[in-house]
Amino acid sequence: MDRIEGLSRRKILKASGTVAIAGLAGCLGGDGGGGGKPDSITYWDWGDHYKKPTTWFEKKHGVKIDYQQFPFENYVSKVISAGSAGNLPDTMNSSVLWVPRFADQNIVVPLEEHGFKAEDYIDAATQNASYEGKLYAIPTYVDCRLMALNEKMFKQAGLEIPERTYVPSWDDFEKWATELNKEFKYGVSLDGGEGFDNFVLANGGNWVNDPKNPTKAIINNKNGVKTAEYIKSLIDKNVVRMRYEGGSQTPVDDFTSETAPMAAYVGSWELADINNKVDANWRYLPMPKGPNSDSSHSWSAGNFLLATEQGNTEWALKWLEFANTERVQKHLLENVGGFPGLKSIYKSDFFKKFIKKTPNAQTIKQEISNTKAFPRHPKAGDMYTLVHTEVEAIWQGKQKPQPVLDRIANEINSMIES
Image (cartoon, rainbow, N blue to C red):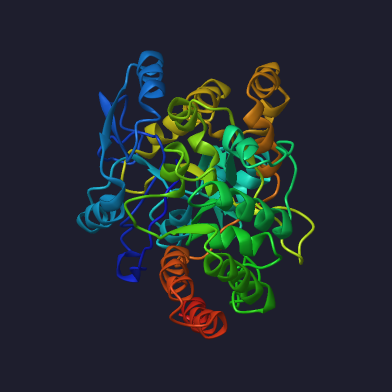
């Protein structure tokens, strides 16, 4: 699963190559490569998705990967501290917003000069793995944000279950939430942070004007304001339960406990976990499209492996090459629900069979192609935290949408200009 945490930029570390989050590679503690075959390399992660692939790497190359896990909440501070001391691992896993930050600080290795090709990956993968026209990360899997629907509870409310790839309108969403609310305490559990983001994206809006090269904030334009007003109207009608950034409960918790028959957003990476927790039939649906969009949209994210400038580059790159294989990406698809970054897998018999036997994957496949990239800016993490913290004032009825979004836009513009 891809979770995100706001980061502050540290330009003082730039010259020495301080911080890095690189994916599933290893770390030889450091001569930069060329020193012969190491006994081991060091890899940092917050999860365990790559533990099995590291054993495959060890068997093939005879080099152990020292797999070190740290809590996600402390991961960035751990990396920054290690970078300042010159103690980064050889390779690490990176969440989606961190790649531009580390690339800007010159602490991760540009990959195309080592034979990796951006064109080998689907757009949803490369758009978050690149910075200023260069590929810095291997997108081992990609994901998207969707809604989840409990079929039994939907029928109980007298509603017709939509097709898995049907893109609902705001009118559809409000109708469903209202009818479900008549039968259950809450019709929908809605994430007040990324849930809002994805409604904005699916209404023709964004945080910034151009994610590839942002020059100004547009979150406060009519698309953003109308989206916030729409969500607040649902709150006022008491048909949605809002879940806030950093809270102890999420929409997924409400959905799997059957407290809410619908949830938005739910990550594509949570496919296997929901299957294990929900007895009733359920399905993914695309996020609702607003009146200013002809399609559903959500953020694209995933896991991104990088090689650090402080480690053994040669063997970190060998790990990235190994993680870049169909074998590893098939493993992540089957066991995590992360869709492949590699284009070639989408044409394989394996992938076609997976889609056929996994109905919810049909929705994911469609929506991966509709994703939008996070801004390619070193302070994208700060933007993330800013937006999700400030919009709570709207949901809680403390302020109207326009002044809140104007304040957010001013702060984002200051980040872009700094």
